[in-house]
Image 1: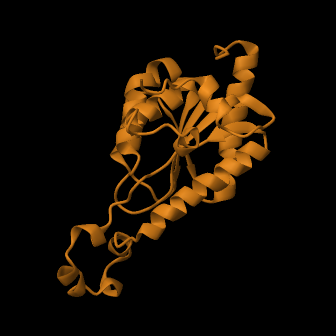
Image 2: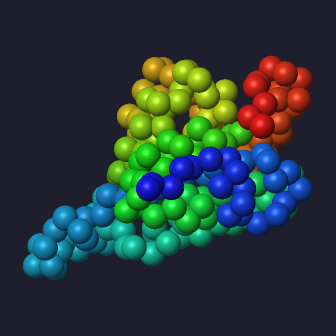
Length: 206
């Protein structure tokens, strides 16, 4: 029988923080557009990367970029769990096997169960890596959970997904230049959601 994703299950699998029941789901890119994966080794040898314009040089990315993006999410998670003490988590933290529940469905359910969800998009190159999962979450939840969703992208990121999300779903979109600024905006977003729940402007999830 597939695992049922609930608020209780998520909270039980996360460590203790001040606001255990305020779940903050953090999503980020899982891949970048990488010419190293598109071109053959012979084709790459014919290209002098240093002679390319800056935007094209950035397309020659390594897997280290993805590791860096995941590390960014982990640092943000740690900051939010410390101050203001919300239960920030990544999909991996809930330990639900993708053989039981596919990754996109997991993301939808994590967002549905969470008090707040943020799509964090650092600049990794040409491709907007969380596009499919983010689109699925928005398609499923924007109407009922729109006030709980936020896109936060680095200034250099341009994406049709982000532009259309703002228009189609009236999604809140923030930009950031530094990690410190990103953390500050996510804290402010979480605090705003928490206050609206306390005032009754947003339905309490428990």
